[in-house]
Image (cartoon, rainbow, N blue to C red):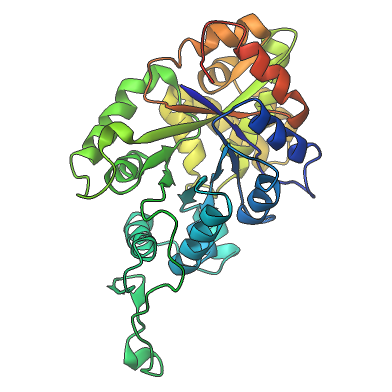
Amino acid sequence: MRIGYHTGYWSAGPPPGVADAVRAADELGLDSVWTAEAYGSDALTPLAWYGAATRTVRLGTAVAQMAARTPTATAMAALTLDHLSGGRFVLGLGASGPQVVEGWYGQPYSRPLARTREFIAVVRQVLARERVQLDGEFYRLPLPPDEGTGLGKALRGTVHPLRADLPIHLAAQGPRNIALAAEIADGWLPLFYAPRLDAEYRQLLADGFARRAPGLRAAPEFEVAATVPVVLGPDLETAADLVRPFIALYVGGMGAQGANFHRDAAARLGYGEACDEIAARFEAGDRAGAAAAVPTELVRDVALVGNGDDLRAQLGAWQGTAVTTLLIQTSPTALRDVVAALRGGPEPRV
């Protein structure tokens, strides 16, 4: 199992220490560095800026929101970064949720799975340097004459992509979306992955692999890069307290009532009642109370917390799961210490 570093979202501005942490990830021989976007900073610009100071680490978006860009613009950015990084870019895509898609981007959110299929189909045409043509429900290229000037034509990109098979990963929370990742993408980017449900995740991936399109990477090459909060602290509970606000934010604040896919994912782990309390407190403006309502068991299911021995012991549950890459989400200043703690045992190999 490989180790990567997830830089997380920006808050009010650039997070201090991330540039140094990205360089440290490269120096430490980690597999990859990933950036995110919601409705503040974008994922591509920081990745290019930070990544320019690296040599070997892979550079991925976890995730670039599909509503933020047309599929062709997304493909242009991907092939550009892949050239500039010498073939180290991984395009991680996500559908986001209706609050962001309709509220921030002004795009409809209907039928996100079908929209994702069309989006990735167009991206793959660009990467294969084919003439881009799609008569889809959501994307029509070229635009039909009755909807424009009639002068549009099927175009082939001017730049030759460095890799026609540049890997595309798909963020997914729900069962159908997880299966879709295995069907049409090269990797899955889960959040709130719990090792004890590994058999269920494997079955969903197997369902998708059974419908996998010809010409894609073989199923054994499929990657599962799970974002995992990691806090190194004096003891388990003290470290868990630093993860509770993160979980409370996703369960209570990252989505609309009735359409919060992160909350649904946590509920599927068996924490439905706790999720109801977290969401109620968060909606009432009691963020401290929402964080306090996060059970330690939920933290331990989806994160690594505690001292070095705790981290290594908890990491054992992840060995042998479908996860191929553990994306550490931790304080930039703690990255070196966290990696050293994880390396203190015989596993993982990084």
